[in-house]
Length: 350
Image: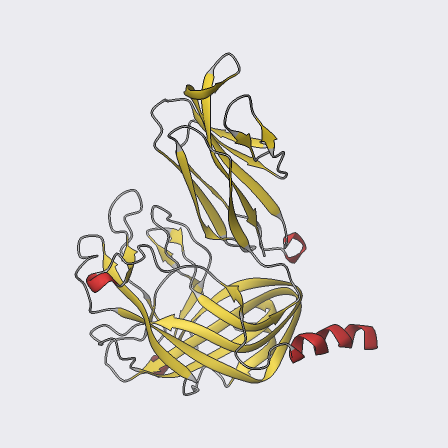
């Protein structure tokens, strides 16, 4: 018992003062510095290939609406602050958010499970410990550079005493109150050209059923952030370099169990293209200026983009995936066929 308690005590002691972020459920900024006045933009991609229609979903405490999303813990987390994201249409960049209610449950689905946090409940709200503008506007594609009527706010809930979460699958449920008539609304996780981002849920009333949040049939995730101390591996996307030639690749997303990672090839000119997925990094110099950074355990041919979604399973936290793009028919390398590679990327899931 003492052996189990000491690591938790060490983590709890490490969260004094301003605690670091230990978990982020996904991005909402799609265009850094690409919004009005040089602010960030969270663009609702209402054109192909995504063609979504929803700015955000209702999470109004006054109507007993609520939203929920799941996450996985492997190891031990000590959480002393939770941050959610929201907007009220028509607000200025001064936050109008007046309350947040949140709950965390384990071993269940939204509304059914073992309650590990009730802060206080979804029928009442805490005054946020801090709330303010995220320097981001929610916009459409056409008004990305000009729209200012949906500034996205953060709202923090202090957890005192901190809660300790051990390995498992959890759901967080939350709703918000604000001083304006519209909303509060919860913006979705947003990545350009990516339709499906997760499997969040919503209820439309205290006695209502929880249902998946979808936009044109695409399941959606919702952004939130935990602060505190963690004994689990941190998720990351790291550019390993190794590319040569003109083709490039971007890798974006949320490297979490149940989240997603999207790899997109750019600058290709030949029809023979592939994205390689591997579970190891050979770090092997090729007979040219390229370096192989993926073991290519799976090759997805003739594509410009690919999305990988790991299952929601705590046992897979810490999984490493190595991704690299290849274009055949052009480039400085040759094995009988000219080719080039993009930079390789290492993705560690949490």
